[in-house]
Image 1 (cartoon, rainbow, N blue to C red):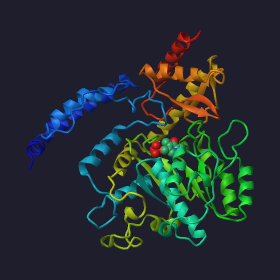
Image 2 (image 1 turned 120 degrees about the horizontal axis):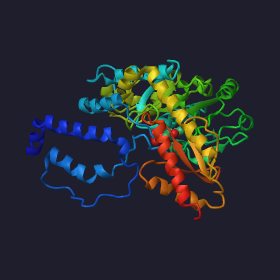
Image 3 (image 1 turned 180 degrees about the horizontal axis):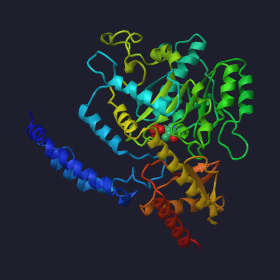
Image 4 (image 1 turned 90 degrees about the vertical axis):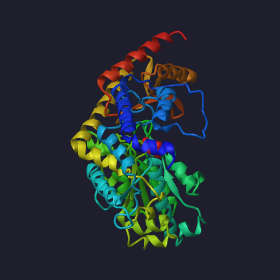
Length: 471
Ligand SMILES: *Cc1c(COP(=O)(O)O)cnc(C)c1O
């Protein structure tokens, strides 16, 4: 064995001890750690012939990279839709690495970790109050979850015309209907060879909505003259957390022939808020659902699940079967994840979720979700009462979409304001375009965030507004 490797193997305790100390220091001071950085560390050593061993390599990381990494899982990182990491989830993620399972088969084939994954899926279905007639699996993010669901939907669309797309490729036009899809669904359609030109855009509802206008949807459906189609709907749009009208879509599903996909990357967790659970009424009737775990479930990246109705299992296997590996047995007889999703070898992503759900239960997550929503409402109220700011949409769930008053006339001022705010390193938000106008999004997804953090951000915003008063 190489000298450095064998030294490290016998210094395992010292290495892990050092990582624990380093990790603790970071996590215990995360509220003070910067939320933004511009510096990319210099002095790139390149690959050396002789390694320096893990302890020295850690020193190198601590000197160069650790100081410039941002506090993305801290309480004031409100950009994108960024969750935190619960203690149990961190423990699960570490152990996932320690055990290093290749999660594929539920039994036999040298590994049992897929059984833990299936058990975790049942915990998630219970948390989200979804029926057990969904088959789920873990992927890296909501993008891959959308991809997985849409791949099976594509197979379904083909099968309605007697085609096997996985085998023969795309040969015909496919009808995709949607109003405000997340960019990752468009990306998935592109990867699946469907192409965004096949999307028929549905109008959004009246009154500052991003959700599907149901009568426009029905008109479009009628124009298809009975051709099957795929509907991509949203439980929580990224800008304003708008939800499509699921009971109305469910009613349409009784009358027309389509695959119903819901992107519920973060919005699915609205089920845990008594004031918001009605937004998900009827969602269990969808054919497929995307849910991100590295957002509101507060487990580390990369973690998301897909749920696809069990009745589509055969289509799913035809789509993803790893069929040239005879040693893996019949894909329908033997439960093996590599026949049910895009990836083959995968780490045991379920473990952080399993540990966190066991550690905090439904009540723990209810409190996380309710707290985030209350904080969004509080921050939204601050925006609404601040004369130089304007809410772009009501606070529907956990995101606040706002801009500078009069921003239409001075779009550059919005980005100048946001970069001044982000440069403080004390809070981070992301820029957006909403209905063609430049805006700013703050998303509340982290269990650590408290009213104190909102107060800090409010103070900073007022200071920057004051500094730029006459600019
Ligand atoms: C974040 C998000 C995605 C993409 O998720 P990744 O985890 O970044 O792959 C898709 N849809 C919605 C609604 C999202 O919020």
